[in-house]
Image (cartoon, rainbow, N blue to C red; front, side, top):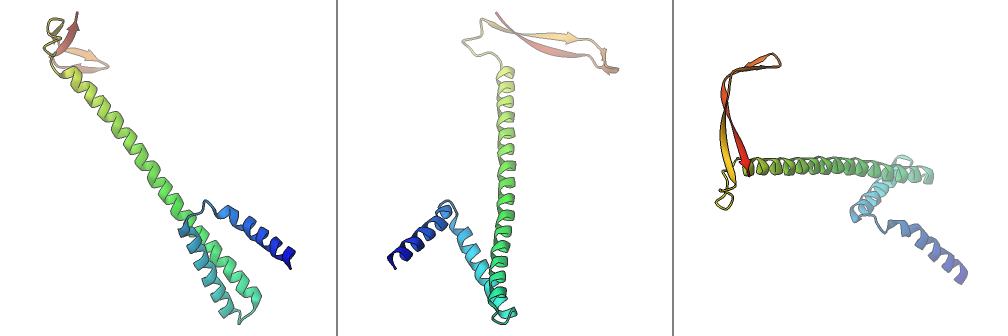
Length: 141
């Protein structure tokens, strides 16, 4: 009897060792799915153990399929949010750089930096006629 108990304890320990990283929601969902499937199989099979077993397996598989769909949706949403965050950060850096270059020179840079207004005549670029305008050049000596 002691050997049978030890073998049973070892078998249960091996069977449950894979459950260490599984969320409680998944365990509860699979348990409820298997129990519901077993009840449905028992009822429809009029107490036949084969139908009860098939119903329990079907309920557990259905629960796993629903959780896999939920996990895939959550992963897709996370990836989309991550990419949006990266895009926003790049835009902020670009705008900060443009703002820094647009602002007139600081008082400590003033002797070394000049802003020159350069008139640009009417010109044609790639078949497009551009109106006369001015460009501001920042010259640092």
